[in-house]
Length: 178
Image (cartoon, rainbow, N blue to C red; front, side, top):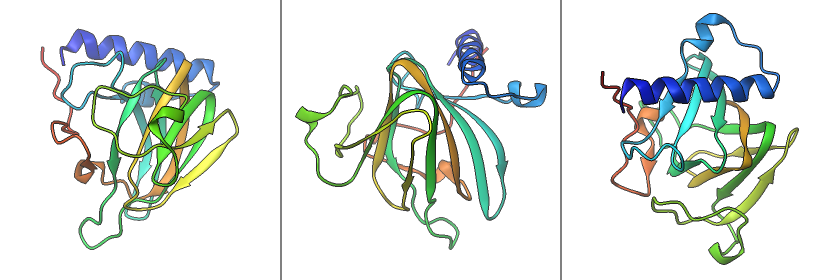
């Protein structure tokens, strides 16, 4: 991703955090991660993240999905002898359509099918104040509604670099070019 594209995404994410009433330090504002999975389709496939803490035992993040932006389908697998990540999402702003393993058909979802491969359609709709816990090794993907979404994540240690994606084209590490 080009540096100017990265900077624009950071600015949009910071606006969303402000709308949600999330107060950030200057250090946090300067550490926004922009994830594009190597697709260069940030309008529809992307995620913006601030990681507050990621120790051997716990992790806390603030995630932004811009309007109708999707986080690709993935699961958190065991890494370095530790179980896959268990995570709780809590919606702070907007609406988040979360899709996990279980019952549900793609014809019945409120979101749209993204340009990457997805296979699970059990829909959980998160509005501000709603939360849901995703257990390790559970396929999931999520998408913002019309106004975007800000989601807090509370989890066990994050090892997102080892996530497994349904769509084999995707890469977790974002590369920023000048």
